[in-house]
Image 1 (cartoon, one colour):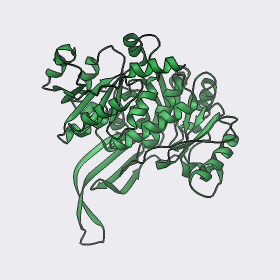
Image 2 (cartoon, helix red, strand yellow; image 1 turned 180 degrees about the vertical axis):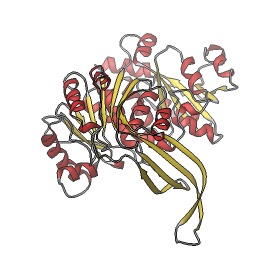
Image 3 (cartoon, helix red, strand yellow; image 1 turned 60 degrees about the horizontal axis):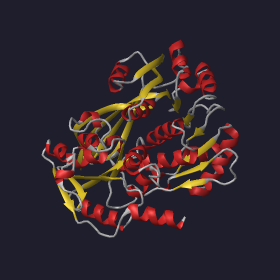
Image 4 (cartoon, one colour; image 1 turned 90 degrees about the vertical axis):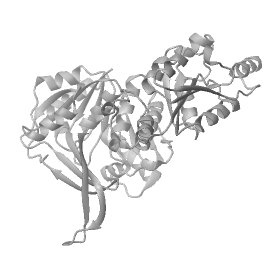
Length: 450
């Protein structure tokens, strides 16, 4: 899928260390710097997340003629950057972080005395997009008349998601979904209050004021509130609370997932649910502070972040697989037994097409997205990876578990993936098989009742 991200790219720099004493000349902590990390921020982060997901990404942004722009381009390797010209410098945001928490931020550059200048390639990139994500960070890109005209035109044909900013431009009328957070939404709508009631009032006002197809107000630990075109009542999509000392980037993860889901043909409400889940997983895995998979040699692109985290900590990665069509007590017991063998459990889930080939045209009864959602809701499951093949060798090559678990009705001799696991020193084990629990039997019983 060809996704064009339009917006203000920044260079984000983290200076990380520990703080165990105060300065002798002022009551401020002294940070002993241990490492400096730089990455693409703003629209650049949104583009990086989409590229990491495997999409073809073009980034229409504006850069200054300075050293910071060169460093930002290096962070965007593999992404086609279509830059406009900034008369001022490229924005750099430096966070000072001590003991895993941000204690100060320094902003440099990015002063916008005039709109950036764009040439024909920027408008052509927008015109060729299969989906568009506008990541507005108040730097002037989305206020450019030519950019706005191009977005209006292409927004009539493909999904256009607009992630707004308090200092940014108003979304264009062809925006399919605008995604302000609660503070942004209430401020823009002139609504007082907090929580879901304030979010609902703000969404209603903004939908009319911005003339968008729909508004999604992200609510942090409460999930998101979705008000579709013509709907009288909002839909609230809840989420599991996630403990995270660094929420930076969660909004970009949400908007990027929403854009792709809409472009893939998902209904808006379903796309919002997928985006809420993705943002939660992003924060649970460490957010932007977690190393990118591409920087960790053992973790190829597409590897669940939980694996990289556990492997860095020297833990044991456990994986199991199957169709899990109608989840029953036998499945749950097997999953709990598998999770007890290590520090994380990843479930390799057969896709709908894979299940049909293995089980017949009437299966699966439950689609892959819902099967994955049910599995992720179990406390013993840390992540789910969907695969299209008949056997899981390819996905196992990606995640390389230390232990591969099957039910006790299997033997290693019958498992085509056993030899794959052995190549990196992994071990295939079985756990007790629970007689009397069968998805096929359940499906037959349902058919008989029907």
